[in-house]
Length: 435
Image (cartoon, rainbow, N blue to C red; front, side):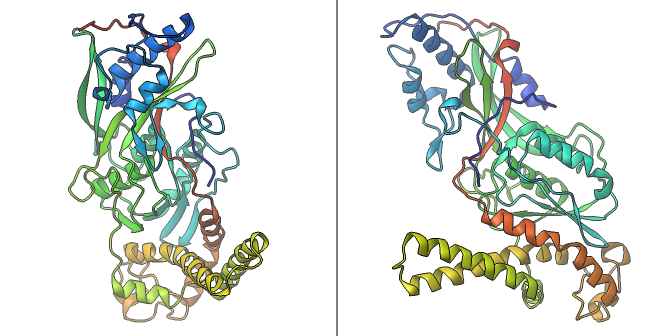
């Protein structure tokens, strides 16, 4: 997957938390002694120091005064590392210049999985993702069940996640816990605050049964979506445990040619013990009942899927041999088997989801004419389902194969991010106390 870093895009909507944050940012001229640099560096030292003192949830890792510390010294002292990289730093110093989203990301329209279930893939939480989701609302509203795929979605803009949750949960529904830093104007210093974030819109997608597909590379904003839907809507979480990024950043875009700054200002946790404090631990999926796994595993992947998997896997083996013609055959065979098994798992997971969501789902060779189909609730799974009906539904869902393969083939050398982006020119000048 392409590296995910931050892009200076305007916010569409900011939650109550981020609205408070906007008023907390600082840019003032308190002078700290002993900085061994020129005037420009001195001014930059002061600016970065004060942003960190007010905003960073790790501000206590800094000494009482800046002394001769450079901004880079401060970032190293904060050291909010996760997965080998720091999150408080000059974002422009990241490879690619701090671009948050891959311009080549492909967005897909929703796909009818069965007559009762629709599938939608959200590859990232960008402004484009929100536009595609909003464009899809009419189609999504036609189905009682929705599968949301955030596998390998490393996150993005927090306001986009908030907006999507606002279409899935009733107005004023709590869905996540935030602990964050804000500015106290009377005490002239930063302080800790807590808030339960709630939806603020009337949803288009009311009373839906939801399943969320996730994996280890589902991170940050994806984890907020999964935790929120699990706690507030009883969604099924299917796949692997998530990445475990329970912190959020503010990206400050700055004028005068100065570097943008990323600061960790937010700690995130689920509302219940089930999701809880998932930072560095991840959110665990729900267990798939053995009978569902056994049923789906005997049908998926199909013959066509197996052919596609074989082509991709053998292509991967050829790439290895080009770089190392003498590669050990036993290693290649082991890699071939592991990769094949992993691809097959990716194809099965949407079917695990649909079997959880609708009791009446059956593959064409069962015809929906057995006991399972007869006992199903018409409103929950379509009741008795004919071979023709199921075959047509699976044919409509064939695009999921290509989506799953593209997701799984993506690189995973990226840095997940959940952020609010604010331009410094919109910030008030707030004086800090010297205490």
